[in-house]
Image 1 (cartoon, rainbow, N blue to C red):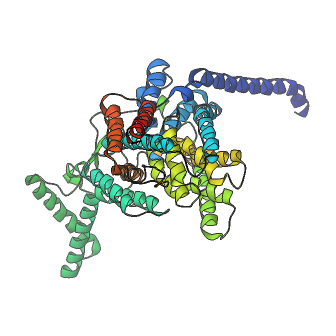
Image 2: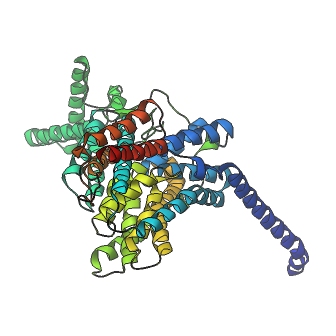
Image 3: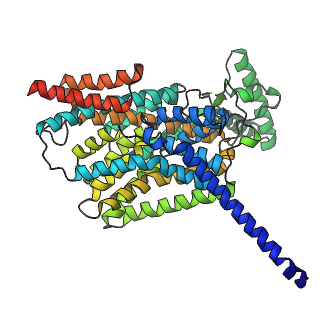
Length: 532
């Protein structure tokens, strides 16, 4: 036996070497294919996630046919359901599915680096600016800020139209916006999102809770009044509930979901861990509407088995997710308990926290990052607003704003490149890692109705926080020698006109965000020329 093995060893080694070469060739071909089709996107995609999604659909669904329409919608749901940069995760997932994990990582850097390099250059320049600027510069910056407010307000309206599927989500958007305006704290926004998710779960399951409560009350009444056994009381309670349901049906009402009430012969409360057969598209214009806890799907989507979004196994996916949450807990514990940690760690921890709790993509990053860098005293309000306005005109993901903030947050303490790297990886890592892990478990996780319900509330509250960002930027958008830290744009109606121009131009005349920013700056200089 040993002799035969030794005799066949050369053949085995040749086979393994061939497999290794084939694998390397496949990876190389995948990377080349990714570069050939995506190298220019990070340089030419302006306008934020709504425009990015349209470009990706036109390229990878209609033109290249890397994925089909159903798969695109499923990836879109996953991108909207998880924290992090939505359009970045979309491009990353498409390349993983078509060319493999390594090609997906390559596409991430190709997509992000052009805007990140631009943000780095901006941060280096702003770090060398004096505390006091000439009057024309303040007028220019105020015009840029006013246009930025209009652009973000438009993003808030567009995203709210997708996030609002019923009266409850409308209330949650409104409540989150109001709550974000009334109070500020580092822990506050995550709590608002969690509460919103709990609200939608409770609301969508209220009929099951009502059913279980009524059944329990009837059962207790029978046990107390008649002294019957729990089993007999349970059967009698079931009969009474059937009668209640029949009476409600006669009156045109039902105290239980439609999935239950049409099966009176075996009326039982639906399981809290039930599943849905169709995937609702979270935050999409064609989203399914959740009414009274049931998913009303006007276009049932069945994903073919060969197109299921399961690039990784569920075991690998769960492992990745667990490793991430362990790292997150460790970082947050050190951040909260250690009295004096290095500034670099504090900056990384704050950006890591922001990247973990940002649902809704780039527009939502604004209010959170402001609280995590301006409130901490690392970046001045003026520099924050300046970078925000100019970064809106850069291509690629809005999350590159963290590169700019990372430079300014620590430019007096360590190398500028260190700050840029800290900001970049801290803000992008949570969303990309969670997205990678969830791709392995999404097929199973999406079928749990409670999970879909919670995401609906989280998404609605995240959109509401964008309106909070609009308010806070409005209150500090006007800059001058007197108000170097910012004052309300309402001090002069001209800034209102600029904001309205950016909003109306983008909403009804397809005015691109970079053009709106430049137009705002130009109008700011006109204001200076008239007033000087």
